[in-house]
Image (tube, rainbow, N blue to C red):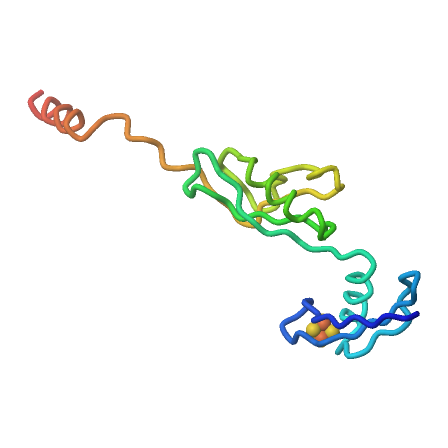
Length: 144
Ligand code: SF4
């Protein structure tokens, strides 16, 4: 017996309501309501093997910002999204970070890297002297 599922396509902001009909074995028999071929591909995939791109942030050690935005380079199975988020939460990188740097290689063994999506430079170096020391040094140099 065929079963029809209604989905909202998330591939673009239009958000078409797409109906996917599959037979008892899960074979897609019919797709309607999609405004473009991407919606058809999305709906078929969503029924058989739903996937998502994960976006999050990772801690940066010694960075001008405490975190850097990251994302999975490609889709991962929807059922592994929370595991992926936990892996990213456990990770940290050292500044500087550059767009495209691999933050986690082959996350969860899924064959997908987590990559940085913006640059984060190193934090400004700590002043070597405090203000009083610097003032003392300047006064001493003036007296010579
Ligand atoms: S079916 Fe096409 S037009 Fe409609 S929401 Fe999906 S991507 Fe956008």
